[in-house]
Image (cartoon, rainbow, N blue to C red; front, side):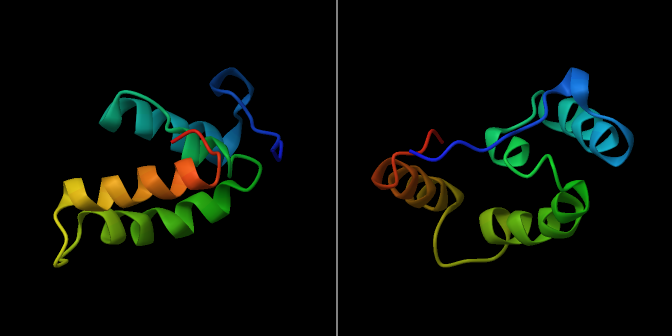
Amino acid sequence: MAWIKTLEEDEARGLLHWVYRVLKWTRGRVPSIVRVSSLHPRLLVALGPLFRILMEGPSPLTRAQRKMVAIVASKVNNCFY
C-alpha cells in the first residue's frame, strides 16, 4: 500500500490552514481525501468545486449511490474512505 505524506491541522500554514479551517467550520472535520492533497493546497482549492459537482450536482445517481460508488472503489483499491 502506498504511503502519502500529509499535513495535520496543527502543521497547516497559509492557504492550507485556511482550507482546513473552512472545512472544520462547514463540515465539522477535515476529510482524508483533503489531507491527501495537503502538500498542494492550491490543488485543493482548484479541485474542490469539481468534487462538489461530482458528488452533489445533478446526476441520474442519488447522492447515496455516488457515495456507495466511492466507498466500493476505495475498498477495491485498499484505501480508507
